Length: 116
Image 1: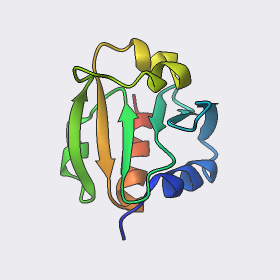
Image 2 (image 1 turned 90 degrees about the vertical axis):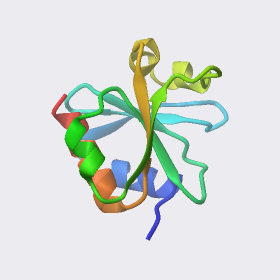
Image 3 (image 1 turned 60 degrees about the vertical axis):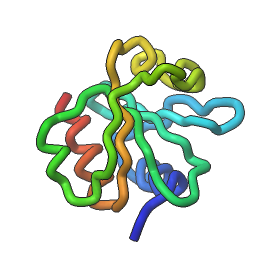
């Protein structure tokens, strides 16, 4: 089953290692901070997919079933909402936007960010 932004938010809210950091005023993006100190951000309004901003991309994450398209960020026209929800992610010169298709893949992504 493909997951959406609400599934990601519900999953992160259920984890003791993740804490809500910031919500954009319009809910374009929300961010969570993991116990490792790493931030992740995503759009909770998506209905057909879940794309998550992360600061590091461990190579083993690319082999996880349920991880879709990975985009090196920022593109020519980056999101200004990212600055409002995570100064940590915003100030990184390179970050990644990862499409996550399953809860298991989301779990693997969270675990990979806890190691950074």
